[in-house]
Every structure is written in C-alpha cells, then in structure tokens.
Amino acid sequence: MAGRSVAEVAVEIALDEAKRGVFETANNNRGPRIDEYQTLANKTLGEKWCAKFVFWCFEQAALRLSVKNPLPRILGAGELESWAISQKKIVAIPALGDVFVKEHRHVGLVSGSMTGGTFPSVEGNTWAGTTFEKRREGVYALKNTKVVKCIFLRLA
Image (cartoon, rainbow, N blue to C red; front, side):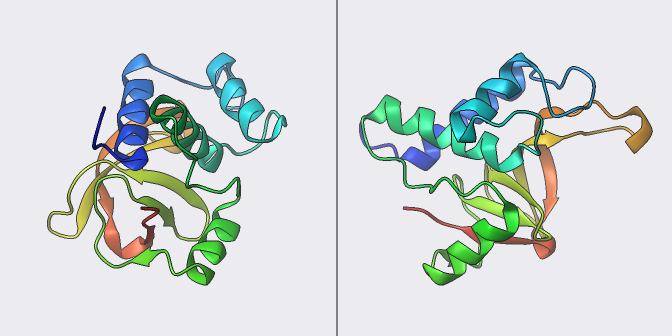
C-alpha cells in the first residue's frame, strides 16, 4: 500500500462495505455492522451515522497504513463543515478521497472524478433507487451526487 493516502484507502474500504451489503435492520439507525461504526465513533447506538461511517472508514485506513487518522472525531455534518472552514480544508473541485458535506446535514466520500456537475460517492445512512417509503437505509455507492449541493473537505 506504499504511496497511497489514507483518503484513498478509506474510499476502498467504504466501497467494500457497499459491496458487502450493509443495511439497517429496520430503518432505525441500527444493524450489526452499523453498530460497529457507531461504537467506534462514540459508543452511542441508534443515531444518524453518515459521519460515523466516514470516520470509521478513515480510522480503518489509518490503521492499515499505520498512520494517524486525519479526520477528527466530529460526528455531525454541520460541525464537520464548520471545522473544515476554520481549518481551511475546503476545496472547490472534488477529488477521490475528499469528504463531502451535503446541504449541511449529510456526510459521505467522493469516490471518483467530477463530471458534468456530479461526482460518484460512497455514503452510509442513505438509500438509492427507491421512494422514501420503500427505502432500505445502508451503505451505497452512488454515481450522480450533485456538486452544487455540497462542500468538499480535503484532509491530505
């Protein structure tokens, strides 16, 4: 893994989680794997977990690379956005491994390059391809997240 950043490895880990099929048990912010994300983040179960998932991915990547996790343990989207602004971590063009905050309330990872105003992402505590009523909350790799609704944090 020489030469790879924590952010790049975090994306690989996140994509593996999406392929694994991690879902909530009853759209209740709980499930065996989701409880692992939440326990590592702050030992509190049943909360919104999108930022906890991203933190977990970065923590796993840092452990694999034997380095310090560059993502602080900030578990709210708004708080993470405020921290990134104060630390001058905001970038205009998303790149692989950037963390994004969408509409001040949801956190995910950029998993590829921006094309035509959208970018691919991997996110926890979300759903894809269904109506809200038929949703199945979990970890998903998405293809067309809109840039205009997001701010981007670059940690490296």
